Image (cartoon, rainbow, N blue to C red; front, side, top):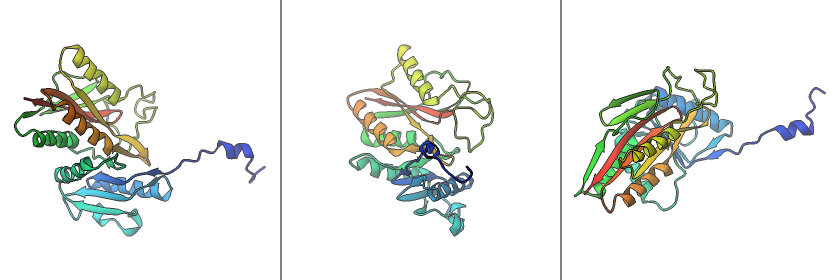
Length: 262
């Protein structure tokens, strides 16, 4: 009857616990960053996500996020006035020195450079000042529908169409109306194996996967970046080593090689 909830109806309800984070770092406080802040405010209000800090990194102290009205500002929000490279050099260095896994996450910008590969390369140069650390483009091309090299970074995509900025890459692709049968992290792992089969050196491949977490916001776990840096330190300690570093969602990615030579 109307207005009466049966035991069966109650048993079908899915109760999801909120996701807990330490700090969430949003790269950029402009149109994209302010959109992510508003979405996370909605997620917090809905009990879907809880965090200790929400840090927006922008070089402009008057960026859009800094000017959000109070009713659009989620708890723990602050703007860190800094360049992205300078912020992550300090922040990731501090996290790398800590014992235990970080509960932090990064919300990347669609327009950001290959920041985490930059950081790992800089860490390698600081670690081995008397060795050559080369940032290099890929030695061959991955098997994906769209790709383009720009300097030492190789951009790849399974999409040959324009994707909306708020796409969460669901199991059914909004553009093709069919199943999303692809995943860039899987393709990058296959590419690294292909390189090894061809006799080219890959001592480790690391894909920092930006996956949807809540309310249209994708994140990368900081622990993945710290773990990659530690692996580079271990495998590069005894001689020449080559690594493939990628930041990717299911559909898009940016790749680069880091080569450590004696």
